[in-house]
Length: 333
Ligand code: P6P
Image (cartoon, rainbow, N blue to C red):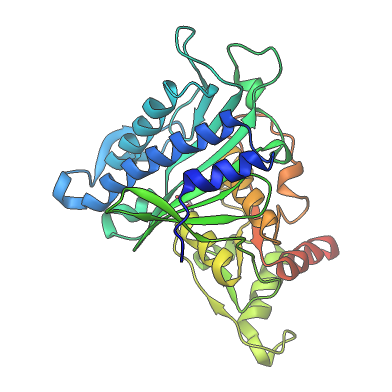
């Protein structure tokens, strides 16, 4: 089989008018950065990159050394890239406009540099999530307000999964495409064209230790799945929870499922657990482009008008028929 590289794929997308040269080159810079992150993640204990960094991020979460390393790799790679007007990171309080003296482009890049990093020290898959928006016309030094665009405005979204193999999953608005890192060649090879989420599933993903905090629709939905063929669903289900959104979403993209991090009594004050701009929105774009659905239980995630950069939202995404069922239960409550 002829091997197609990420570069060739992106050039084809550009020839078909689905990306601009600037967006193609931006994605290539991000791909190079995630290769460098993959090298650091895979070294583990050999490179002294495990454990705590001794600092907290803007979320008040203790940073792992690899959180800081991944964040620095992405910022340094993209600062010089010449395709961006600004960046925003889960790890950094404020947005980062590209300095005046640096080459600039017309896009805004948002990212969670190392999602699921609590799994690093136990050698479980983690990932990088990114989202690309257009910089508003005439904006030279973007401020936070310029980033606060609904998820439907995204021009590209993707994630890297640092698992048994390193994969890059990408959409530029024409389906979802997967690439696998060939470590010997140092290049991403196009291995998964047009990934789709099956509309039905046997699997659900939720942190069941929060059950006592859930709202009634989620309690109803999960208990029906736990009742299996003895209950109203008439069939058995399985549960998975990696506590690494990228790993859970990738499994769902590969074989179906429904991922839930709903609002509950524990996280209601923050609006939810997961962050809208660089977790929920990019994953929502990917899942919708793959034929799935992504809601808060009440509304489509990509229709939410953000009001702050690090805003949190409830997330229910995956196999369309299951996400719609959860939404129905919310409407009936
Ligand atoms: P919990 C990782 O910290 C993360 O942001 C997502 O990757 C993951 O799905 C979720 O939080 C796990 O949360 O409460 O199960 O630890």
